[in-house]
Length: 186
Image (cartoon, one colour):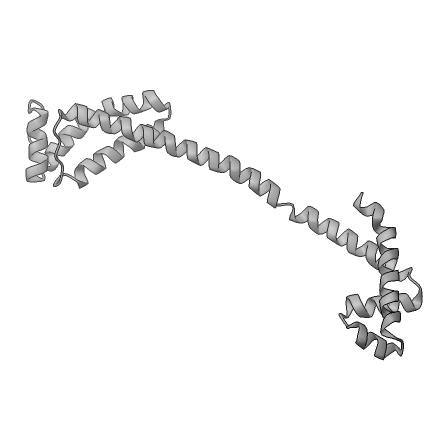
């Protein structure tokens, strides 16, 4: 590497932009990395984030060297880049934090699946228990209607009773179940 210590920033920048000079880039990197890191760390108090921001600035400087048009002094440009990247970083962290908080709230509200399954199974067990306590004909009509999904007409034909009797038996079964399960919903 050439001795670039005494060369002005503007000349190094010119060498970087016009000649793709890696040694000019290395010199700028060595001159400003610590200072930029200090500026980022001062605002963030996070070593990793500060290092990442400075590294991104230099990566961007190298990758965009052919299209750069820096009108201010290089230190002003670099420290402005730190400032805006810090602002973006803080904003992203705030959004991420808000999302995590909202996500945790939504997740806790939505993830009651175990509790809901237990309640549903308990209810199903209680219904089955109370169905067994129904009178024989009433239980038979109820089970054909609710468990086997048969129509009132089919039940009437199968049991040789009128459709009106089927309706009465289902109404009777539902009323008894409702009354006996009322305490479950309190």
